[in-house]
Image 1 (spheres, rainbow, N blue to C red):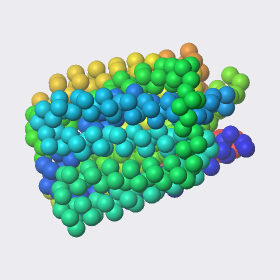
Image 2 (cartoon, rainbow, N blue to C red):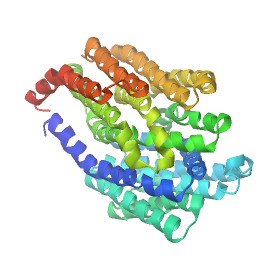
Image 3 (cartoon, rainbow, N blue to C red):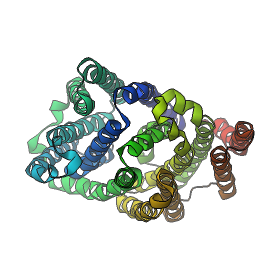
Image 4 (cartoon, one colour):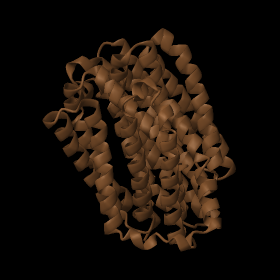
Length: 460
């Protein structure tokens, strides 16, 4: 199949699954914010984010190795899957031994058993569904996303409204959804056929761990950029402010959801073998469209930030709209930087992913400590923006030594400035700002129209 058509087909398939699923979860935010107080919502958010921090550490990020080497035709699939499951299991045992230390953390006290379950089930689920995708079960991978979301919604309603379990119910709903979908994928894809201890290969295990291990600190650095500000807001301002900031992140998360949909399909295409010239042309064409969609979508999200926040959350959370524009601009650069990291994946340069993300994390920590004290939650949003701009800039320069993408810096700069203008106009409540913001959106579409038309003509 034409590589562009294959990429589009996979993107649409993952889009039906992931975006539809995430959109349903997005619509449930008013339910969560009415059942849970802003303080309770802040605690649940911290618990889940802490679990998400522990997940890659406990598994050494092995799911990254599973998808990367599972896609290679020459790799023994049995060895890849067995290594993935055993690594995730061994990590859980280590985590279990360390659980007394976790219980000493104030907001984790009483919830450690829940976090352990959350981490174990999430890691096993990730290994199973990534391996299923790597061996060609693309539709099953997509169906898994739909089923998982449906179950998460069902259990949230049961454990928050029918059986009011509060914070515990919110986290337990995710655990149950992950567990059931793991069994579903394992059985439907016949993954038991690939678990063979006799197939373990020292060479494959070392390759997978060597690729995955550097992505663990990279994930931790990403966590610092995305989540550490919430801990500092909770410490310096309070849990209620953390809850409001968490809701503000829900709106730009739409962009990241779309980017993750594309990434799931793009990983399959990016690893395919091509000549250097073909790879350069293919990556450049796709990146031009990706950039256009990212900026246009971000502009639309900023334009509708007040409306979406009012629809999304209870009245007590409405103040969250103030942080949405800046966080959306930050997410745009995060999406652009994420695409560039696919070059590192294709070239098996995971250490470069770590190094660039670490720079952003350092910038974020300095920014958070410097800005939150003076600007409150807005300082955290600005710090996140600066971090992602730095990551994108460094990757844009460094990846040219691996693969020269053809893109226009003036186009990108003007698009970013138009998004920044939207942020300032909304924050300052400039007269007729919705009109001016809409004009910015049209300007961004006009700037990237040529690239979109050229991509359509080339078959993308």
